[in-house]
Length: 361
Image (cartoon, rainbow, N blue to C red):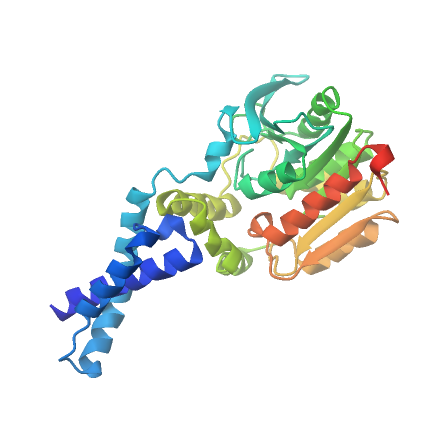
């Protein structure tokens, strides 16, 4: 009986924490229930039991209560889905369209999202290895939309719905055709490449692709990491801004998404004629950076165990004069795309660089 009381008491504590933190995905209740939960907690408190008996019961209840809390909240909040913004249709303030961009061979699946007022500028986003066009992209997309920018999310060759295998140099066409498609619809075009996507974007721009601004996030000159580095990356997931995902997605969706996030680093599911390691080496990031002309932003995480700070410095040394680099203190390879402040700052930079010429400083 003491253990049951402890289990219920800990669940109520979790509910209060979830409510106060705004973690809707971990909450099964409603703010109006706070007085009732407080009264219930007092009623469950075992007054005639010593703390020597209470503490072991509370300790034993911590993990089972968390599991029950997560499962209950997962059912209660099953419709809490940040990926809904990528579903085709008219949403609150923006419109989402599923498209297939013509390529020299086949097509490139993409999602095109524009604010209600058709924007002058738009940004193509190229994801990292093992990911797809909507992979943890809602915070990034939201930051760009808030700045009045259109967003084009594409599936790179061998990823997501893209049936073209990952090859070199054909994979560079993903960046080129994304920029060309946006150029036909917007006055100014930016590109944002993440990890592998950054390597492809940099090489395409160096080879003549026309973009008005280029941002590269956690883009590696080469890949050098092992299982110890993967474990270091996994430990960085315990960040406040990562835990705040519980306010955006149900626990079931989030658990699946985090599993995919880690799996993408360990065993990417890619249709490939060339490995990601070889493709990144072939893109020659440092050689590409030296040939770039558009405004350039490099963003890396100080805690990145995949693209380590020394490699970020290598990229910075190769970048042309006038480029900008940020090193985000509490971000890693897995978490940089979830870092709200870094994403907002990046979106502000992109919006400024893509502003119509009369409005530029």
